[in-house]
Image 1 (cartoon, rainbow, N blue to C red):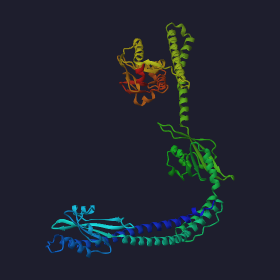
Image 2 (image 1 turned 135 degrees about the horizontal axis):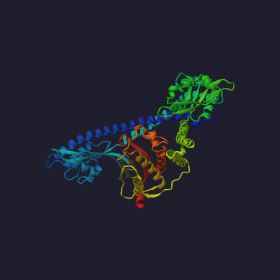
Image 3 (image 1 turned 120 degrees about the horizontal axis):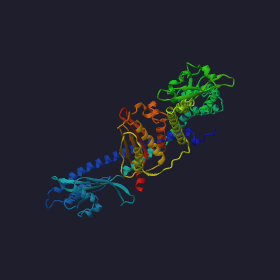
Image 4 (image 1 turned 180 degrees about the vertical axis):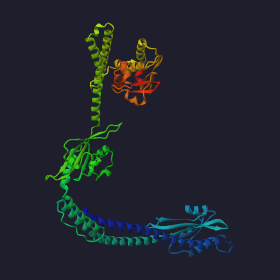
Length: 609
């Protein structure tokens, strides 16, 4: 493994973290301390100035309102004398302004006495007099050789509740900022010393942490080479010491686990090679140690609850098999979990996991869902049985009549024609059955094609109904609920004609004398629905979903008597499905049955047509 450089080591990171923490702490403390100290010094200085200004305001106010005689000094002279008494080192200049005309009536600087009597231009003074409030701020004096910060303040003078003037004061504050600069220098020096000490302390502390970590790194490298005998030295009983002890314990357990790795690899390889469907793995005692999600779903169990359970009980084989039987089982085992309404069959293949020495480590069971395959086989057997039965009945009848004719019945002029007519009827029935079977066979083939063309369905439907109405030989009334407007659909005319023939034929067969058959077409957004309703005996509710199955009859005796093959509705279903539609039945016993089917319909194509 590549050696970690000093600038990427955790040692340096610890030191940097310590230094940054102290630096941030010192900076926060320094900024807060300097800001507070600066605010305190400036506030104290302003309060001191304010006290002196208040005393000056009092003295000046008396001189401004005092009445004077002819021989008394002027107001400006008296005020100038007062201002001289208030001159100090930290005060650069004091001016007194008359509030009535904004003229300067006194100044503390003797060299600027020439401005007395002139109007002031200071905005701060005017705002103070007009707004009757004290105005003050720090400014930079650019008139000196070296720019310095000064405090400028204008305080209004009151008399009798009115503002009669203002005192304008300029004070030196640069010495306050000089003191703050010295304090900042001291803090900076202290911060530097603290950082140096922190770095040294961080190096010492980092070594106490990184040294055991470096030992664990060496141990990990040794473990990658297969050496589990080396132990990490425990320096202390703190968290890192506990980590070192845990690391040593882990080394011991890894050493023990290595002994079983070879067997686990073989088990995992067997699971992967057989993992086609559900997979269950057991230990040598036949208890489940692994079950994947497909297997849990097939068996309808929770993966957590079946762990450590015997496989024979989970699969439901405890009555027929033992674990030893399964270990020697070479053939597949069929599990039938079918219910009365839902078939479900599984095929289980077993594979033994064993070492080279022959010692059995466990068992792998691979589950395959063969429900559909079994269902297809059952339907095939049922279909063959139905076809055999349907063909045997007419053939038996024909053989009996032919034997009778061969024995001399052909000489009887009354019996012979009846026997021949019956034989012909049964022959035609077999021909219809074979034709229907051929039709279904064609539809089941992969190359089955429809010859579609656009047809105005109401006209097409009425034409088929007319044909039945002209040839009917029973007293049945036809009721048509078919739109007069054109509805163009793309269909195979021959196939849809056969569908309607089968449905209408059934309706006429089961309609009583004097009954009604209703034909209806409903136009919807994406399909049209065609319905044929009769007033016959109806179909029991339990049989409704089965009438489209091949060879299914509700009343077998009556259906056979009426000449049906049991394939008419099955053929109709296949043809409607081939057109992309659906077919269904609704019935009330004793009141009649309605057979409906839908066909795709596009209104845009209808408009184009």
